[in-house]
Length: 505
Ligand SMILES: [Zn+2]
Image (cartoon, helix red, strand yellow):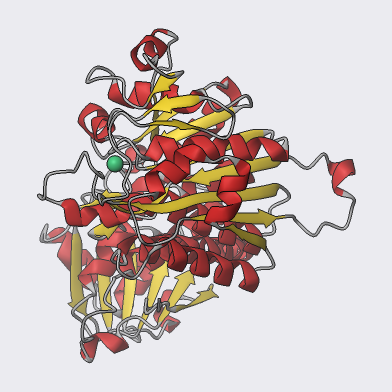
């Protein structure tokens, strides 16, 4: 697997706007607001171009509006981007506006852009720097490695300069450097999930995870089928039976290298679990052919965990972070498991497989039991688990299920901060009635009603620690481009979990 994403170089300056030489100078403006003095002074030097545009009402600063024009100044072009009303500003509005601005430059030969960040005083400079750098990198993302690249595009945005007041510059830069690490991790997660299933098999996913781990000083281990048998991972092995690609259980262990002993700091241990179905045909309970190609992204949860592990290590987060990714294909064949089969999970619980397409919860069951051996302070799983979560809340939030209020609160807060929203869903005891087994302890489907909750209730049977489950079936993939999320894999969860871990309480 090759990574061909263009990653520009970032620089940070506090020069006078008239002194900025760039192919494009990006100026974010609030809707219907008087120009700040710094801009009026600059505008005078370019023959009041901005003032004339505003007077003519060609641009007012409306949310998501952009206007590009050539300038006589040192910066060859000016791009005005609208932030909307000042009183309604949020970090997500900034991200969307910057993303629109970056997209507007796509067909222009601009190698260097500078973005003015002064005047956005409602945000901490560090957060602002981080958000802008993340947005730029994620907006430039394209999955193009199987296409001939356009010669012209090669020169597009090689350098991005963040312009800020002198007093804010070091904080902006600090945030920007964090943002760069996080965005690269999101890009890795997107690449892994966008790759077709003939490239990213369980073996490739394991190889990529090991490659990432070696580069970042993370301990790694891959369990093979014989190890899974020894451990009694019958639920995972049942799913793996239909495929000729051997299943892999990926283990990543990050421990921060801290100067003080970790016991003194009471370093917490968090386990991330990611669903790694590299292709889901549904198995014998086969899916309809329509959009089945998208089922290559059924390992998006695993990709998120690999990305998050990379970011955590690069940011040297003071937390023990474990990544577990059970990975297999789910295919129908003469050796595939059948509806009605009964398997035994690693904790001894028996499961009636009533639908082989409900395979995600099966492989996660064994991974959750395995997580216990780390004596975790919290376990968070990411899984493209149910189509029903997409019906319930669409693609605007991930479904959040948790047995722990504090964990739920931390994730919700991080969701608001990053724009990767999560929405709490119920885990009532009554849902258990729907998954109680006839011939075994539990069954792997709970009927039509409350599908996302019965799936989560199933997972809960394999937890006895603070736990949260994120159903990312609606958020991990998009068929229509959104700000800083082009079509395809979104890498959802990486920014969310890093924000959660940075502010861990
Ligand atoms: Zn499935």
